[in-house]
Amino acid sequence: MDLTGRVAVVTGSGRGLGLAYAEALTAAGASVVVNDVDQAVVDAAVERAGGATIGVAAAVGDTASAERLVTAAVEAFGRLDVLITNAGILRDRVLWKMTDDDFDDVVRVHLRGTFTCARAAAIRMREQGHGGRLILVGSPAGQRGNFGQTNYAAAKAGIAAMARTWALELARSEITVNAVIPIAATEMTRTIPAFGPVIDEAERAGTPYPAWLRHDEGLGTVQDVTGLITFLASDAAKGITGQAIGVGGDRLALWSHPAEKSVKFKDGGWSGEAIEAEWDFEQETYGIPAPKGQ
Image (tube, one colour):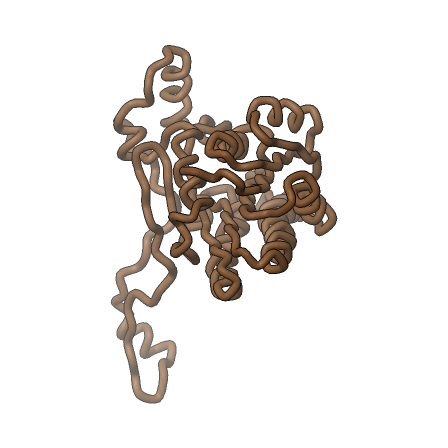
């Protein structure tokens, strides 16, 4: 994809998926603002990403940080065309052990950080009058739920809902809004017993991930996710908005939106007894399926 002349902000881009996004954008010709909370990490990411890249060390979540990122893009490159909200943290615990701080910290970075950064970017893009791209990073946990991730799953589910809402609100301004649902080998996926040893061995031996991992589980390298990012940032995706799109390994997927699956009607409404008598709905599955392995 040719992104020459485009200016992007990528939050949480000091390492991992965010850094891969920044590298792919610069390789496609975009100017990029990289972001992390650690100045040394930011400096290393700027050097690695190359091209027209600057860095901003800031903790995503509050309005001031969001406005710093947008201002940095405009002052350095004259405009803002693309925002990728990738910043995030984990504080995994089961419900009965999760503290207020565990919940609030994750929601502040993921959900509030997406909101504040998207709001600042949307204001700037609307002022420019040339459209734009908001690419919000979600997760399978937000689509299906995941054990031990009350805070993370709730935040990521909220991000998908915000993508649909903002797609409606920003359509007249020609600003598209989509949620990306990536699956890649990261420090988090390495903790999954079925994945970690396979990822480590492939990297040790310098061999590709096995077909069952890339195809059946849809899990590959962080670079496998970047094609969707550059596509959504480009003119080729100008008609795509309000969607949740999954990518990883050899798999590209469009997630469905919540919708009524089965409906019954009863004149006069439903008592508890009537529901008991006629409940025969096929219930939905929940949770991320366990890896099948080889």
